[in-house]
Each structure stands twice: as structure tokens, then as C-alpha cells.
Length: 547
Image (cartoon, rainbow, N blue to C red; front, side):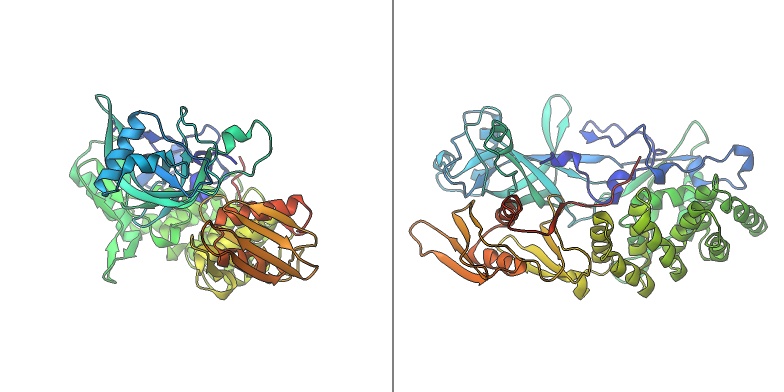
């Protein structure tokens, strides 16, 4: 299992623009997301100064507050099968005892000494522009001096997630959220590697943000004389183009000047899965542009759009203009050059133009470099044509396109019967069965969320199969048509369930007897190893940005 701190979520985690400024020094730790190698989306053609027809927002601002904020805690993992330990005296134990006292836990030292529990260090990363209620993954691991041998089958108790500040020593910072949930670890291999992999894991989507963090624009002092009038002009330019619907149902501005150098901006829902693109479009907004100058620039942009060398930047500028640029962008769909067609379709999608859907569907299927961007744009388009393209892509032979389309449709219409699925188990994981004519595929998530997707309705286990999973769960194929699932609990009646060999039915039965999502993932992986499942097995087949 890769460390979750290196698996940053959805598309935005790979798309932070190379043009943004350095993080402001706050004294508290933030994780930089800079890379010398810019993803394809970020390689916006830099037009020479003499070609610019307007004074753009991006010419005089940098983008701040786009780093991942590390939050951490010390908590307790319970439900272990005697593999926990009594933590030695340390700052971790002191911290945990203090937390337990604040929650009126009876006999806290006895709880810590119980071999069914283990002290763990919890780490998460709040993504840029996080919203209150957003979920994120948590790393859990035992301290170096711990005698715990395995976190298998464990459940992380509620942990307050705080930023750690490094100002005059180590101090606790603001509480940003809370986390809990079942711990997912790698399957045992019977090698020395288990000593490491069995004492660390991830809680998928276990962290819940308690804050909303806007993105900040910083006016560059070395380029312009900063004053509130200049900042207000930038605010006005952004708000002329973008507004969002507020909690009261009324339209509200996305940008607000905080002082003569700083503006805070909210991300419109249409760009929620591609926040970087929104920042790129904002940078392409002219601060002041008379109508006559706008008309002249539109003519110039039409020429630049048709040139593969300048079409990316031209499409972003046209998207920044808005609806009056739609007809110009449509001319790009007729180009013989694939990149020109894609850039034009991408901008049209964010302007709610259905004509972009077919081209974006072709890119999502055939173009690995731009697949992630095409799927994000289809999700943002959210109309019948985009829906049909995503539905067709869920029959694609390519795993990334197939699951990527499922993911995009889930973001676009989470309540649609095709992707809604069902919620199972005490840890509330999602199971979805998608009709498919393509080769059956079983997809599971080990980042972001607990989710199993079966592409193909008739997937089933093969006889024979026998496996003892964590939490005293035994699953056995009794015949070629029947499967039994049993969970043994000391001093309690056994929980038994007999079901068909259909994979979906077996998963449901496991959830009914009390198996957690990590338990079920372990069973599915063992079934693959034993040859009891013939479907193509994929983990986190999320379209990636190729560099």
C-alpha cells in the first residue's frame, strides 16, 4: 500500500498551476505542491508581452493558500485481535491520556494496556480550497517504540485533527477537523515486510473538515503600486464574470478584497473538480477592457485558437470572456488538429455548451494525456449529451476510462440509479453494480472513499474457496452454487449467512454479519490470489495527469 500522503485526491491534486506564488510564511507547516515538471493542463502557452491586448489579472497577482495543510493527532485503534500493546511513557501517551480525560473515559490507563487497543499517530492533509464537511484520507501508524504487531481489523476512534505549528517550539494549532473509521492495511505476505505494513494503514475518507479555506490572490508589489483601488478593480473584474449561489439562494460574488494586496476567492461549483482551471481562467480575465478592444481581441483570439501552438491560451481567454465567446470557440471544433478541438471543447463545456460532449468523449476514450481533463469537463457540463458520453465510456475497454467515467458521473449526478449504488456495513461503504457488455471488472478504492464497483452484473466466485479474514470471519464455498459466511464473536452467538456465489450477494452477506470494508477488500484480494474470481481486478484506476 502506498502511503496515503503521496496519493493526493482527484484531479486537482495533480493540476496546481505552476504560475502560483510561494506559500506565505505563517509559522505553521504547509506542504508545498510545486513540481518542476508541469502537467499538460498547466503548460499554458505564454504569449509574448507585445501580443497581449489587455491587462490581465494574472499579470499582477500570484495565487496563495494552495498548499496541503498537514493535520495530525494521537488516538486509539480498537477491536484488535490481541495484537495491540500498552504504549510506553512518551509525549504521545501524555497527549492521548489528556484527550481521554477530556472525554471522561473511565480507567484510561487500563484501556491503553488492553492488547485489543493500540496508540496510533494520525496524519491527514487538507486539500486547497477545502470546504466544511469535505472528507479526506487519514494515515495511521504506530510510534517507533510501540510493541503493537498489527492493526488488522482495527477501528480508529474519534481523533481531533490539528495543525502543528513550529513557532518557539512545537505547539498545537487550530483544530481543522475530526477523524475516525476502520483501518485498511495491506494483506499479509508472510515475509519480513509484514513487520512494517501491518502496523500502518489508512482510514478512507476518515477525516472531516470543520473549515472552509478560500484561495487568496496576492497583488505583486514589484509590478504595480498596491492600493485598495487597484485591488477593488481586480475584485470587480472577477465578480463581473463569476458569481455563485449563496446559502439563501441569492447570487453572491466569488471575490472579496481583504486589504490593498489580498483578495479571497471562492471556487464556483462548476469548477469544484478542476479548481486549477478556475484559477487559470481568473488569471486570463482582463481588468479593464472597453467593448471596442474586446471585439478586436475576439478577432485575434479566433486566429490564435486555430494555431496548435497558441490554442490552449486562446481557449482559456475565450472561456474568461464568457458567453459572447461561444461562437468563436465553436469554430475550434471544426479544426483538423486534435488539440485545437480538445481545447475548444473543454472551454465550451465550462460554458454549458452541449456541442462539446462528443469531442470530450473521444478524448476521454483515446487520449491518455488529456483523459482526466476531458472527464472533468464532461462532469461540469452536466447535460443529457455529457451523460450519454459518460454512460458509453463505462463500457470502455480501458480501465481508467471506464472507472473514470463512473467517477465523473457520480460527481455530476450522485443520485442517478446507474451510479448511486447501495450503502452497506457498519462503516457505510458503497457497493455499485453497473451493467456492462465489456469484460467484467471489479474495482475497489484504497484512497478517498470506501467503494466497490462491479462492472458486469453476473460476476461470481468460483468453487472451491476458503478464507479466514480479520475479525474472526470465515468465508467458504459450500458448493458450486452456495457460499457460507460466518463471524465468530467470543461469548456471543455466531453470525451466519448463506448466499449465492454472486459476488454482489457475497459482499452483502459479509456486510450483514459485520465485516468491515477493509475485511471485504482483504477477502476479495485473497479470492483473486486463489483464482476464485475471474473478473479483472483494479485498485484506484483513476485517470492521471501524464507529464
